[in-house]
Image 1 (cartoon, rainbow, N blue to C red):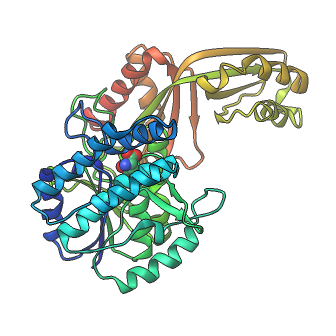
Image 2 (tube, rainbow, N blue to C red):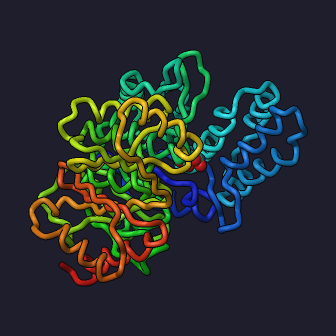
Image 3 (spheres, helix red, strand yellow):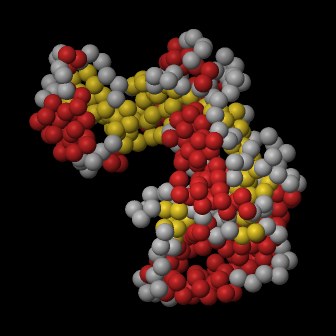
Length: 439
Ligand code: ASP
């Protein structure tokens, strides 16, 4: 058995947290590849090292003094080194980083140092080999991640290395220029390493015991999801459930490697398993609920719309010409609704409306703002009847007016549009009917 273990920022925020991570790795010989994030927050008012680095570099780029900010970053690492009683000095590293900041090496380079330095400490602490991600994770000239080249280089390197630490979040272009993934990108690195090393499990250690059926800010102590498929997870993450980076499932999905989300502070918890497919039914008809506020709907009416060839294309062209992507597009015989992000749409509203009028000539256009979308996701929905009915009667009982419904053809999720102000009530009503009433 081989495992990749990725630790998030809060799992490595202090020496104490590092010790917990170290104990986890040492408890299982199969935990051969470790992917660390940069030190995160030690308490709610603290600042993540990645944010400190961005801030510090912005000063360097503006040619202001950054000595104080730089010293604060150094202190974060020194505190960890001292707390772990390591004979390690990062002085040379810091000198090089300071020099590179002065030479304006770029904000990606700056941010990546958070993981880089934490990786050096982790490797020293565990006695594992350190592999600089810049040498094995490749980005194209355009800045796109180059999955196949990376997989080749990294597989080869890992074949030769039995135990290694590979810092998360960054890689480099062929010429050595450091490039990062988007925020939270160490999850992606973990997945890339898992694929290249052909491991059996990708363990992702964080500060919660897995995915929850609904947002704990809305539902008091929601149930944990024991098992979820990649596809379900993708639907939920897209709609705002954030534990794992949205792109982290792609590399492991190619190899069918399961991801196990675990809690560094409660290592005995089973966490959530994210798998390719499973014959295990979810505990409830639904696997999870997620949602987002801040959408607008553009409602079009035109007599005989259904038989007019090219109507839909012309309407979507109006959005495309204005550089706006749409989220959903439920339609009726003579009506069509296009849902868009309000913050993107609001500045271009009139330009889109006039383009629609010009190209598609609808009879009527109406815009409604301040809508929320809720995704009710579940692989078991396909085989159980009456799911939609239950959702709508629960919403009706809670006095929530449903503005839009869209069921994907995969029958994996039902999207419901409600007013922003009904968002929390609607989620609670859906949670209660499926989880509390256990139907
Ligand atoms: N340290 C980076 C961030 O804060 C990446 C990560 O933690 O995954 O976004």
